[in-house]
Image (cartoon, rainbow, N blue to C red; front, side, top):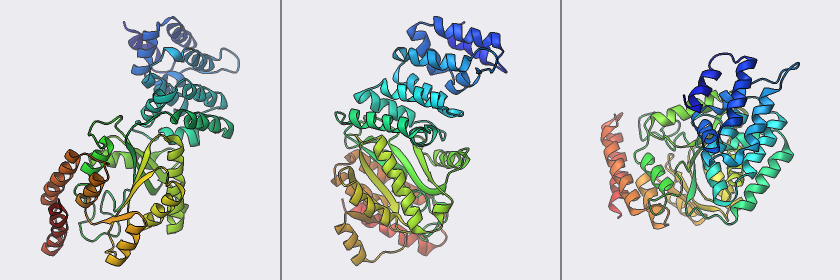
Length: 385
């Protein structure tokens, strides 16, 4: 029986003291390759959470945490990311936060970038931003992690950007846009996000460089965030993370913008080695977000796209373009600008055009006039190149 299989049998159901000791013995005796395989194939949250620190008796949870941290050099990048998740998923004590810090400090340079990307690729609410800014409760430990990230980012050049994208009226027609039936996934947006993720050569350093920044509120158990992720996966966006808002931030556009900006600044502190792209819409506060980002993060920002859903005048569009905020009617138009700026490959642009024209045929339009007017925008943008 393999080590992961034996471990799974020991962790099944409620774990007794004897079984906890057997788990510890198995981990102590495991070779470096076997231990790495265990951390790759076993749910680390279940592994750590199944062992207890008893008031009168052995502190087995502490023992397994200390053992894994002591042997962190035996673990691959993905296994280290899984270990951090195991410490993050349940209640995270100061000792757990110190162990999480050890995971970060165990990697340098490009390895640290790969570790952060692996941490951020989870399909639930336990992503990198939640780990550093929420689960690590100690400001001192958080600062030590962020300082290490900043130092190690200096020599890393991924050659691609992280994409920060709104959801409502940016990915899906939801609030202010009357050009499409409500609930429509905008033609071309999925192909554009994929092309931006793949970068200018269509050969990405990493996939999953997409994070959704939404005003939708989060909650203590991650239920809303997990629902958002599930909806995005159903729409065809598999690799992404989500940064949510608050109920209070929904009250005014200023509060919505402030929350998004704070989240994006957090994100930049976690990935300072990457350039940033922001995609939003003109319906609420995203123009304000884009303007503030140019003021605060000009050194890191490549471009701001705003999906125009409220028929902004040509004069206002020209003014905003002078402030490096590009309003677009279609994602074909956005893709053309992105290609001109060297942000996506020609093949990526072609995929956006093809997906957009195909998607238009699948929409159940509310009226002939709605379809005619929207198709005209795509035909105009498609004909430009």
